[in-house]
Length: 286
Image (cartoon, rainbow, N blue to C red; front, side, top):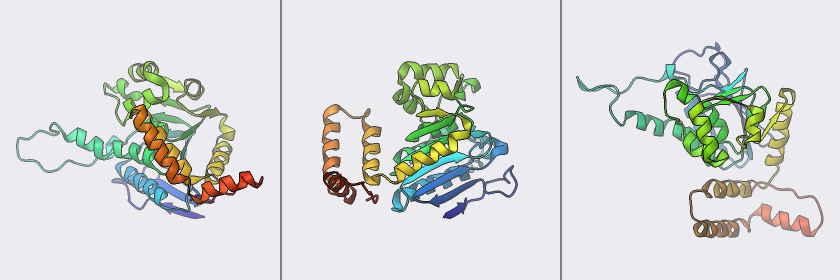
């Protein structure tokens, strides 16, 4: 087992003392990333964001990693971005306001948008283990994952309207694709707490489970994914994420090419052989 703490210290001392504010553990092909600022509601800092992006990119390239689990300590999953730790802007000539038009857009594209893209673009399946509140960018961090397992105590909040803000962090891209436009409008405009049970009912998450079986449920699913055909999972994830953005004929061409490319993989050969030989399948992940 390999355990790594965040290599980048936060801009200010973490409210949880000397404990690392984000950790990575790799065991049996499963990379577990844990947000660890429980006294701050696991609000994500810029340093944590960059670390998380880097680790997801590393997971894509590392053939020994076949599944990623994203979780958190304490009673919150992630309550959003930690705006208190945003750094100062660049020096400006006298009389230039802070910010000018374009500054916020640039920060979003370089910040929260990159984080959500990193989850969506990770080449390995990503499971969110949500044991508490997931609000704002914290909710979108969960929704970007391929599988979301939440405890019955968890809740999801599109908090932006409560603050007079427009939904950001790619929430307006994620929500209609997960639950349809009508439900997306409801969540964005009313900004109400959505319980884990209702989130499961409307298709916002994969499954809601009792708190005492959350870890076991996530571990079981992660083990199944880590034992699966990793490259096929990656290709299926890519095709599914593109499916609503391209026309039917373009998607058919892309699907056909991807199937052809993957049909010669070691795992595809093993899958066919095990079926013909009537034996259990043993995928290697490539």
